[in-house]
Length: 173
Image 1 (cartoon, rainbow, N blue to C red):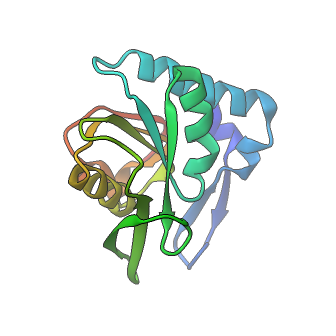
Image 2: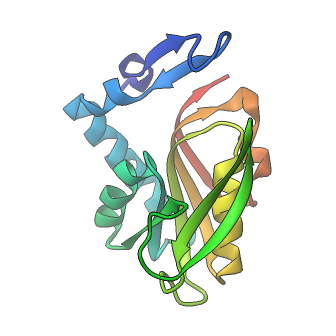
């Protein structure tokens, strides 16, 4: 399936010179959405080490991670923006293009040694994905893979990530 045909390009968003890859047009296509989830599951099942948990990054990672966890008979754990989780959390502050942000996860989300896969919709500069990996590593998790729908290769985000398999279904240079 040609996923690029289902992804809408929006020029000059959020600022001039940027082409925003809008996946909402992919999400509303039933066959496209099914293809994405099935493809992530097939590629993940090829890994040497399978994850116990799929970690979804707020917010669009929440769309794909639970469905993938269901396919793999694993658990789903959310990583959220600051102040969204009700129990005790671990936090990490990380740099954005124009400032900083904070991600949080429940302290009791895993036991040490849990095998996890981090899932989000897009990898661009890699900052959010790396911060998530750093947070999980501090908790004693073993990161076994990443999964993304879209990879913006020109921003070289994968270079910031740990040396684990990275699944990306659509690549833009």
